[in-house]
Image (cartoon, rainbow, N blue to C red; front, side, top):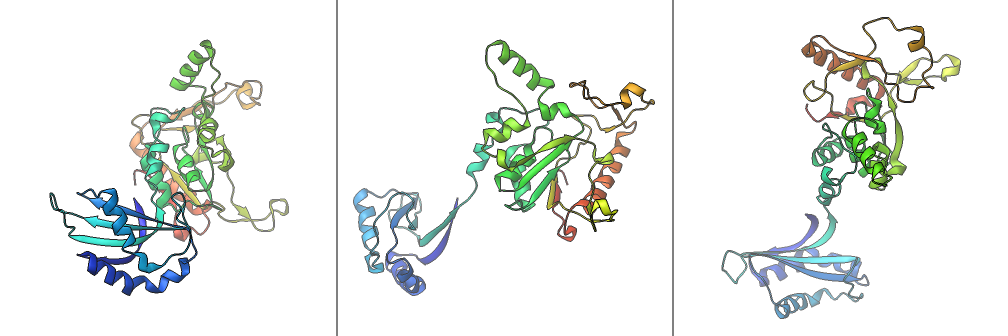
Length: 324
């Protein structure tokens, strides 16, 4: 799929040429010395090489003097011909200047079947890209996913040029130290292959490492994040607003994964409250809500409260999740 600027249209070739002269003749001088190329795009018909050449030469009155360049020309013009089945004469004709190609190829590029690290809850690549696009992810913006898992949404936002980071209650999904990914990595290691399976590796796979700030282990309902401060934190300034351009995520809904928050039903021991630097594989304690329906309501209220605190210009509200 591509976008073209309409230069002319008609039901017959004489009508097409008349329309082209009327609509676009004032634009031709701007491309007089530019490299150019003509394409012919037919629907339900095939033109021979001689017919295509004759059709292209019929537009010689545009009088372009630049070199013909088949790869990456400065000006690409396409003639579109729509034919009815088994009809040699076109029923509708258009001519236009190429502007840009759509992002359809990204669906294949980020296909989960080709991604080296995924889990059972990894978001479909096409849905993640659509969500990131709706959220207006773009260069110069900072986006956050509080339920990042294997990084599906941050990768989608990074594809559009945004700087991204995230968090998850289960650090094993970020580090790739648990579940199927851990088992697969262990089997590959036995086979003599060294291949780290983690979120950072996914960004490396797509050449997006420069857009990835990293991730933290955290719980949205007990977030360690803080807002901007007036006068600076050292001066005891008051938190005054957000610093994120958007939050794109897929909140847990208690089907594939249980709904949990950080903490413990029992009082932590002194050892559990002390530093855990000596225990690399230690997992933060968490416990499930007894009534998961209540948890969903509470989580969404916390989520929207979090958005209003940390998203800059929150009236634009760029916090989206895939199951709104």
